[in-house]
Length: 109
View 1 (cartoon, rainbow, N blue to C red):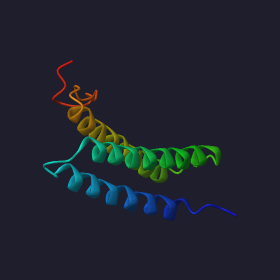
View 2 (view 1 turned 180 degrees about the vertical axis):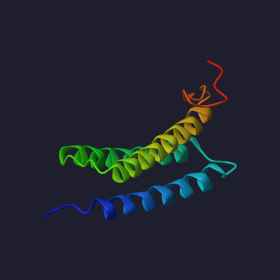
View 3 (view 1 turned 135 degrees about the horizontal axis):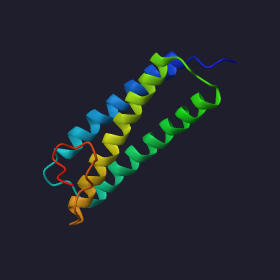
View 4 (view 1 turned 120 degrees about the vertical axis):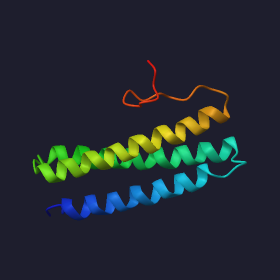
């Protein structure tokens, strides 16, 4: 059975957007606990890992449609940003320095 990559990526994009909205709402909670931030990070990490498996499957099926690979890269970037954002909130609550992204304009390194 052939995989409908367009539908798969559309579903994944919608799911990533839903998680992004949830992350934004959760991070606005003024008294967010370390346990809640840790749970949030685990949910985001799990979503990112699931999407990584989809990327691997696309590579195994030699998907070479530029539009599909561009869409997949955009979704992967969303998961990366969500992961760093959730990790940084947890790190901040733990008293640690946040992770700095290489392409972050605020990164002075």
